[in-house]
Image (cartoon, rainbow, N blue to C red; front, side):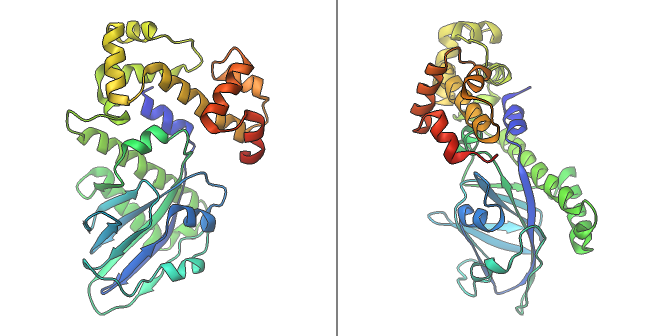
Length: 321
């Protein structure tokens, strides 16, 4: 299994559609940070990504410090850093802001369907979120742009997504048995497809974790590390697995990923350990063994260096079980 698939498998994404809005120009929508959204919709979430799918019409999206970006029907945008942002019917519109003050009116667990009746053209937005483990997804999220935009209008998947959303949301079938679960899985599918398409479109000469995935040698090395993190890997072992010299692999891996293979493996092991510590009652000695540490003392020292507290103390604060 490739490293991206392994990360996405382990993070156990939780998705939801929370807004199915019809907005007639002029309008502007203020969307708060993901931390604020999490407090309202999913307080137990470690990290939320918000997304917007333009089902009809057109609009603009703007993050602080960036130029406004035009969106059209069929565009999917994901806010990867959880930043507050503004959407509007035309560039530069500031009022009226129809969401910021109304967040408390949006009910968690259902698809809210607000209407804003201006006098101009209508835009239909479907908005949702994904809960991801921040530690396990750190390499992926750091490699993505602040706004990940995907035009799905001309793809088979995009046509299926649009047809399905229309079927579920226009006819209010999300209220039927299993409707919320299906919409959750659809949110996850859209995110995975957006990341896959972004990786495929990356030009040569890029660096970062996703660029490493595309590299024939580094991608294989990442797959090895993610596929068997408990193994006592050395750079020589990895080089042998991918068919490259030790020095060449070390240089190539570090240049693309930003850290050496063993440094990367250590961070991944500790992210896995933090996930286990927060979601299970397994003793730290067992967790240490599960992620590849022979010594609980060495594990505790590395864990404290990574997360600022020893495992037992960190668990008391972050456990969700």
